[in-house]
Image 1 (cartoon, one colour):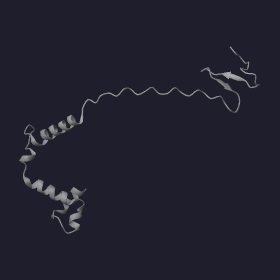
Image 2 (cartoon, rainbow, N blue to C red):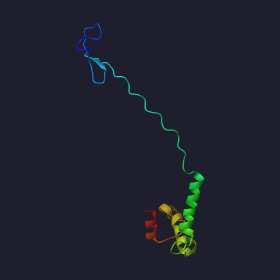
Image 3 (cartoon, helix red, strand yellow):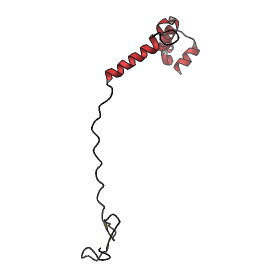
Image 4 (cartoon, one colour):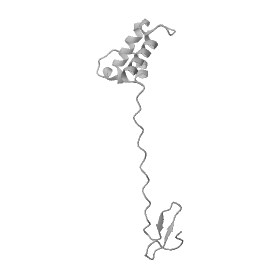
Length: 117
C-alpha cells in the first residue's frame, strides 16, 4: 500500500483508482491503456441455399400460383385475352409518353390515370 506517498521523486502526488491506474494530479492526466481489440469475427458460416436453389424455388412458386390448376379459379393461361391486351397497351402508354407524341393506342383516360399512378 502506497498511501499518500508519491510513486516517484517528483513533488506531484499520485493516487490509485479502483482499476489500479494511477492518476497524476496535474492538468495533463495519465492516459488509460487502450481497450483490448474486439474479438475476431466468427469463421464464415456456409450459406444454406445457393442461387440455383433460389431461382428454382421462384420458378416453382410462379408456376404454382399462376399456371397450375391446384389453386381455385382459372390459371393465367385460361383467362380471356382482352385484359392481357389492355395491360400491354397500358404498359406502352406508361407516363403518357406515346399519347403526347401522337403514337400508341388510345385508351380510357381513367385507366391511364390509375395505371400511371
